[in-house]
Amino acid sequence: MRRSERHHLKENAFAAAIGNLRGQVQRFGRGVTIGLLIVVGCSVVFGGYSWFSSRATAQAGTLLATALAVADAPVVPPAPPSSSADTSDDPVEAGSEPTEASNSADALGEFTQPAGTYPSLEAKMVEALPRLLEAANAYPTTGPGITARYRAAAALAALGRHEEASAQYQQVIDSGDAGVYTRMAVLGLSDTYIAQGAYEDAVTLLEQSATTAAPVAELPIDGVLMRLAHAYGAAGLAPEARASYQRILDEFPLSLYAAAAETEIEALLTES
Image (tube, rainbow, N blue to C red):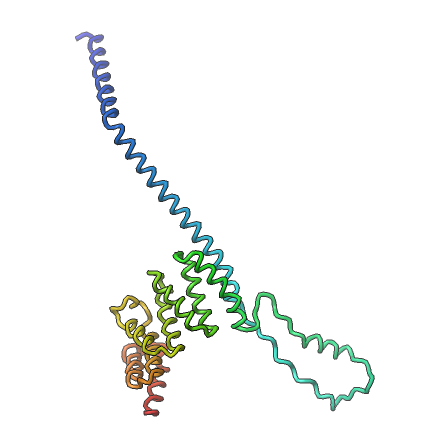
């Protein structure tokens, strides 16, 4: 076969391959286009959701940081007024002018609240609470929002507003898997129940938490038992309280609560 014929055959094979490819593209082009549009659409939606979620978390974090700057600020109470100096040993003549030393003492006696501090825990919590609730309510499903709600519940409890604190703790628990805050909210809620005299509610909650099969089994069981014993005692159930304290000694002999549990058992035995 001559060289020109072989070249012609190659050209025909190449043209056939191109034609076949063009036919396949025309046949499947619509499906491919639709598939590409679906992929692009999903990418846009996912990217938009991720951007919105990240933006919400960042904004919630900013609000939380502002609130915590108040909630975690130091408490510096005013110094108690100093007793007036005894002037019997150093009499001052009537009509005499105050000395420079006495003027300095007067100046030092004036208390000025240091910047960034609060005179009492109550004053600090009163100012922090609305900021914490703002962050919690604006971004309730974000990590910073859940943290803010837990801290708001703790602030309400510190202010003695236990019913409102219970509601906030319950929202943290109901928010799903909030990590350590879900578990700590259980303990906080039990404390508010006890403070309100709802001992049965506290006992029920803590009994569920003290079992390894409970959804909050990651709670420190010795700490739960300590609270449970306290709830039993507040409810007048001394035998149950002793049993819970004894569990701490038997199951967690190295617990930080062991010494306190032993003391409580001795006190209960003395009272009985």
